[in-house]
Amino acid sequence: MDIDKNKTVVVTARQPILSEDLEVYGYEFFSRASIQDQESTIKHTVQSDSTTIFNLFSNFNLDTLLRGKKAFLNCILELNDSLTALELLNNKSVLLEVSAPTDPENQVLIDGIYEKMAELKKKGFTLVGSELVFQEKYKKWFDVVSVIKFTSINPEGFSKEALQELLQNVNLAKKFNKKIVAEKVETRSQFEILKRLKFDYYQGYFFAKPVNLSSKITNPSLGVMIRLINLVNADADINELEAVIKTDPTVAFKLLRYLNAVGVGGGEKVESFKRALMILGHKKLLKWLTILFSSVNTKKGMDAISKMALIRGRLMELIAIHLGEKDSDSYFITGLFSMLDSMLDIDLDISINSIDVAEEIKDAVLRNSGKYSKLLNLTKKLENAEWVDIFAILYEFGIPTEFFNEKYLEAAEWAETLNAS
Image 1 (cartoon, rainbow, N blue to C red):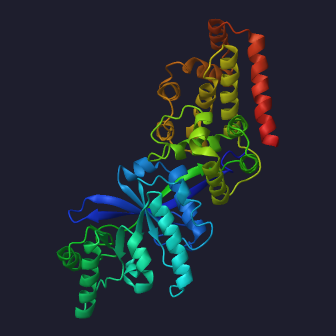
Image 2: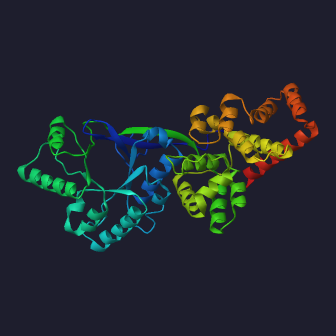
Image 3: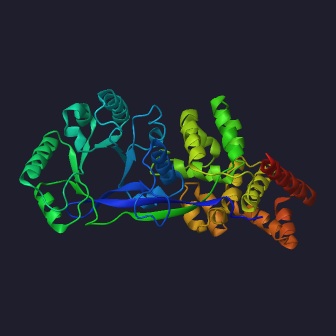
């Protein structure tokens, strides 16, 4: 079996936004079709925005990408489902750049976008507008944005009239305590002129071109996602949802990574899927699943590595239950995530540290120590048929060999059932 058949590469581009002293304030993120693309070849749509947002929070380690800085994310707000992806975000770490309407003269459309902007502002989001907000028909937009990007600056220089209009708009923005960003700064002379106007932040090729970033990912099971969406729509209880999530390592990984991305989960260590679901809630879970479903290309079946990880996790969980351990779910997570390096094709320490799981789990996976390490070692020994060591561990725990064999077959049959579904 080709273990890479479900692997894909997702790409995003990042460009810094700097202060006058050239300190990084934040990064704007852009869609890219491939790692070779220097300019976006993807049409800017609600779907492309959702995919960019989802990839940042679920397929990249956003904490590492941002390093405490802000994320500037583009958004189109003129469709009914425009807020779906945005409501999944942590309003403290992102600024939302509101795109111009497809028909910039349609006042009904402009006012409809304003209603969504007002809703996002009420929820604590910081909104970014373009120079459109200085036009009379966009006056309501001006009232709700906190940051204004000046994008029509001529890199070849400024006419007297253009400079006068620019100065007028800058003064108006400052009068109402708006932060201002000079975008598309391409030359030193342009930068020097803009500095005299006291812009707060600067962005453009003069400082840095967008840098492409890629992440190799494993696509989740189509069947698992459909079952989860159906269960959430049917208002299933947490136990039912947890049981299904545990059947797909990729969904499980992406869920915990999302919850721990720049404070989305409230900074809490998530040690079980049940707790993750309680934090997220049905409404946000459905939105997250919908975006996951639409942002990946899945293939039927499961690769060999994912199946092995499932068997590890399930076998550890079954033995932990037999031993009377109350945190059997943590044993499952330990087994499941012990093969993240193979599943995601990135180093194990990077993949496991991108999820804020319990230190005991990290100890077992990375350092072969702590509470969960012996049962993890037991599953590894079994995969390598190291029976002398297996018997020693079983003796230590007082587990009969026949019982262990029975539980392994149970775990393997469970994984096989998932593969066939």
